[in-house]
Image (cartoon, rainbow, N blue to C red):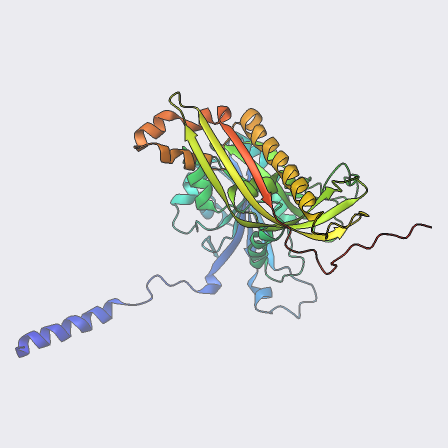
Length: 415
């Protein structure tokens, strides 16, 4: 290589190094890190936005000598025309730049969601600081009140709280989880409708508790669960959308059936009456053994039939019955009874989504879409309008693999 070319190459490499730097760097003490954003209806077609902002003094352990206990976050609200117009307005009262890239949750009030959230979603998805994997919730009541009442029960970090809320859905199945990008795509989809987890404030104690035979473990909405303690915010149930508008709510038990039908059910405690003589209740820890199997068919007239097969594995965790269901001859009876109970629950939920909500929240359209050769013919079919007339059949296969630490039920001695 000639010397001139070598010198030119070295000069180019050196000049490239000079182009690097921290021109876009922001010091951490110049930024206000937003953890959650709440959306409420304002006056004159405005929004009331409430921000939960991390308090850096408590995060670093500073401010310990002030004599007062500082919170891990600060709450601020602003009324504005849109979610991003708030940034400049808030900086008239906050001396740090509002930074949304670490926002873990977006919470919409029920009233706002019933009017439609599509235009607000579009603005959020377009802004480069918003993460598509942020969690989204619907709040019964005002989102501002919920953010103010939300306080980590055992966690120091409020951001960690929202991460754990997502994981808890896999443990009990009482609410779904939806990320911002999935919500945006579902509101635009021709094959399914969107769902969001439901949150609310519970100020009482046990006033809303029902007799066990009237209400099961999961048949509550957020704000109704009879739990007393320091934590006032509850997450239970599902908000159902048709396009970008909220059209109905599902309680925790229907949410479990929804998660089973979509293959996202992790586990949860459920109960069943003794199928032999009804002498007592039987507690089961249920998990989904494998993903559901779907079979779809469409005839010449465009009528759709869908068969869904679920695979569940209940474990006997408590028995208040005198019958020994650990026995190999009685275990199939309990399995069959639980399968029938689950089939009926799934059937009732599907009928409600067809007749009342008119929303395919299960994504059946994604399976039916495979029967069409082109996108144009699929869109012309208008599945979401035809879904209420579809025939959906559900079958459940249950297999009890475990009976807890007891291998036999010993009957109570009768005097």
